[in-house]
Length: 389
Figure (cartoon, rainbow, N blue to C red):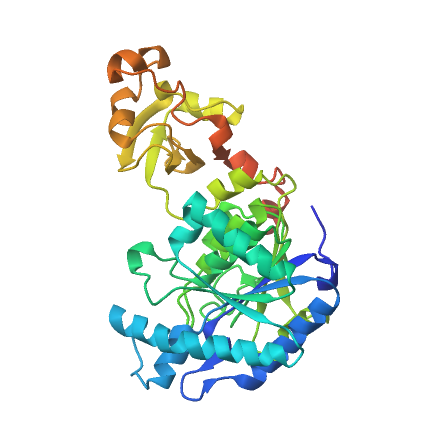
């Protein structure tokens, strides 16, 4: 397992900041906290480190400016709050960073900007150009246009996608909790803190809880999801509290935080993108023979597919589900859903006769697939240490 190292030894760091850290429900923007954070960022940049910030807070700040009532907002109210708050948030970051002569650049993303390959590459090129000229990209989801069907819903997973998109080697998630516990600590006083997570196992996933703040949309569940995306690509992750001033300095000085080790065998850039897809368009349910074949590094053939769910088109990302009901792989499907259903369970040699054209022999080719063996390390050390059943 790769060991934890000081922040100054990383090459490119993505920092995600939760809404509750930046915005007070009554007082609005926490300017002193923001200034201290920007001083920390300046310190990292002085060491030659590229820094990207995924900043929540647009809706929270906008509802404060507009004096909207507490509680859940309607979609149009959230979007209006985001429109007002995003201007204020971008200005605040720009002004605070400029104290150290650092230029900020605003990037607003939607789910499609990271899930559709062409838009993903365009967004990556823009972000990399900002880093090349020494700017700090301030990234947020475009809440003014995103709806529940086309949104991330939280900035933890967005930050992980940004980390993989830009080849970052460290993702820091700052929120109102200082790391991962065996159970939500606000509910279970006997919850145990986990300092090092060598591998995100099903047991680790089971420890996740919900959001703890009115201003937050995420929770430990989304942070674990973010960890799976980031560590797969070889990016380490830290979950730490951002409640104190200068939280990055606090991490450097030994403040408690959870460190997630990067995968020892990160997948290629194309497979990293496939593995990080948040919303597969459908599912292919396979038999034991297909599970064995995929484990041996082979493609998924139609003969091994037992059933299909979802509406998808050729080239979409689909989840491959084993007989036990768990996802075992993910990949780009070679057929539209209708044709895939027609050839499921049949031999590849029969495809032309069934469909009337000679399609690909594989339902999902191995070059377009990421299996759990590629996502997870082989170590079982954490399973033994973190068992709480």
